[in-house]
Length: 580
Image (cartoon, rainbow, N blue to C red; front, side, top):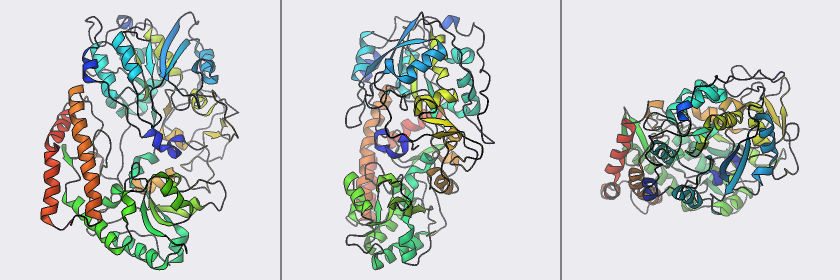
């Protein structure tokens, strides 16, 4: 089974649209104290719910950190129907209220839910929260919003204003699977705290191990490598010589061959791979573009001397004729057309599917491409940019002040995190979309597999919840899917890059911002991202001379004028004030 986050990355990269500051300011609930709700005074007064007995016969690798299969028993009688607003998904989920997993979850919890599905994503992948905003503005609140694209900043703000209920005590008494997750992965709690130290969002984890180095990966065609008699490059100079050999000998034998090509310029920019031999480059991550830590101080990577040296290297490749203008313009169909024709020697991309068809055959072209390790620069710098920690809860459920029994809704959501429940939501019914692994079957980490996907010619609409459920998909869970050891997989490739990860104390964690700061930073961030991208291409292709101090200083001045000092200051303030 192939993870949608691997092959449909474009749909997952679209950012959520923000709620306007004016609307946020108007969201109050009659003067209630932050985090208060209809039953918050009773929170934690009931008996503590514990995990059910483990399901027999399920195998786990050792060690294993992740969800376990436990017995779920109904705890409600269906006399109360909760109204939950969810995203519209006609291609996978279908009718939420008649979905196979919905019915299974009701059967195993006794909780009845009326789902209201609304459009939250435009056809181009951008978020559309207009209907969510209208509900909040009108006071027409459901019992909860789930997986609709509300950001961590928005949920924290609404929670502190009383619109959403604090869930800490309900987690402590009614959510054994969530307690397990927060014990297994303690940084998750810190990441999801609001400024007042409370949790207002109940969500799962989808820990994509190989995604942690997505921006740093590049792949070379092994057959082409063999044809020119080269070994796998380990340094910038060896990489340069390989590309020169590709240019001179054209191992594809076809007209139009490119020694090197970046991935889709929108989703797979080239800068993290190219800068790795010279400096730690966090990349254009939303909310922290090119930002890193230096002994607790927030700094910008794209104006450093290391960045300039990386540009010098790229300019050298351009002068060699091995890096072309296409690296900074190529998109989608053009990229895959070149890739499927075997016209790319080295490709900088998230995975093979970005530039070549993933045919299942043993002789499929994608199998010829193997990972290029992070390259060592002239001074020995060798960094494979790595994302540390766990992101804020995915598919967060926010329980509103309208909910009369938040403890029951928390327990219902918690049941989604049990292992079989997670698999049913994601892969469909047991023994139709997946099965338990047999002894000796391997997961992607080379250890005992936990589960195996069952290939199906056609997956019925309404067979599961796609990836909208509140899942505990830990790194070990994901590595626990049965794989064919002979087929390349991205988790094994990620181990190669992890070896060269930058120190963790240089990684800037996700931070919380107030709406006014978010708006101010957002404007600056968009301008900085554009300026860095444009100058990356201009310096690399000789439109600007990277060795000309006047040209370089002009670039630095433009960053300053665009608000870089303010961007750094606002980020530093949020970092210093982050909940611990």
